[in-house]
Length: 468
Ligand code: HEM
Image (cartoon, rainbow, N blue to C red; front, side, top):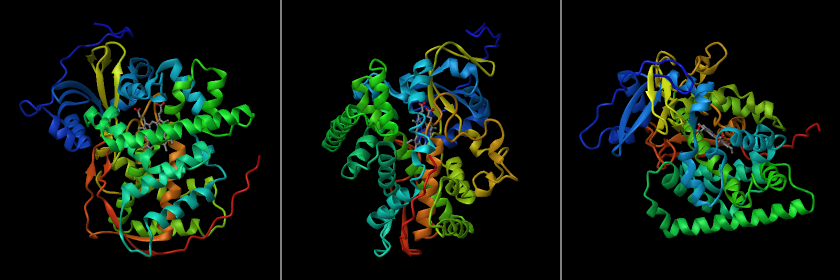
């Protein structure tokens, strides 16, 4: 047999992962998808079939699968469309970046690349820091010495940051609605772990109406900017310009979903990762002191630059370690474009498959003592994550995270400022993290930390003067 790529292959039978009668693998997978994919990889190898909710689905996993995604065969043979289609249809849009493939996708990434890059934060670290400070006063107030729900606290913080970076203003009065809207849409239309009836709930409808209202306001605002020849230099400015240049490609009906896109991409991903890092830092002996020392050294300066935030080696190590142990994308979903050969097997055309790129994160062959939170694994002298295919928290291939570099500086700023400003502890001190799997895997919403007090007051930073 030959695939479309005309490679000779041996079509061995793809193993089915043994499960419970009727429910198959649904329960084991729902409980801890990462552990399930690793267990199945150990038992069956890099390709197997699972039975979830009565559907047989193919899984490819491990370094083999991660490497495939970056090759021409993976790029040509896999598409992203179906996974995001319901979301796009909900908005009555023609496309989103996540749901298009091939040439169209390359073109849209080109339009959005600059707005999603680290440049969006250049010269604005004083503002980002100020957003963390305001958020601390509102949700983590040290004078109250309360327990703070960590994921939710970070969700509010990141919505404000993304608003400032991507559109030039933080729509504060809409933060709650944006958050509710996105969580419902991801649960129902993307992760598909809640039935569609959930979208009839008054809570969702109210939030959705408000987000539509915000969308309409912003579209009108950007139209006015364009008419006066003063489109701002940010993601939405670039998207609006692309709409003017090529209204067939970026259609008027796409503007609203493109506007919400950054929140969908950044809300849960960042909030879950910084929450997981917070747990790792507070739980692991010896880590907090090093984080505090690095954060205090940063804020001993009057001006903070991108290089400073990227140079937070220990804190960035904590974030990398959080993304290794609690990856937000345990697996990526794709559909096969043709009969695809993988490791001597054929996956038929038009199959929706899971790609378990996070499996190597938990294998001692690559990460010794894999369940230990050890931020120093990523140091120059160890670089455990640099072996091919072993570490992919931002995904692989054409749809890999466009906001990766921006995410790293936003998360570095959040962690450094929070641990510089506040004395935090787990409550109880030996607390063991509970996790959730939907809409995005990560710490449970119930994870709370105790704000024990203030370490340093909120000293404002001097803005950086950028060379033009
Ligand atoms: C810890 C933080 C983050 C993690 C771990 C993360 C991870 C990922 C992953 C795994 C994907 C690929 C999904 C797939 O292939 O199906 C992705 C896509 C994407 N991410 Fe992130 N992300 C993070 C933060 C952000 C932020 C802050 C932004 C921007 C505000 C962003 C923008 C995007 C975009 C636009 C895509 C879609 C790329 C495409 O389809 O071409 N991400 N992200």
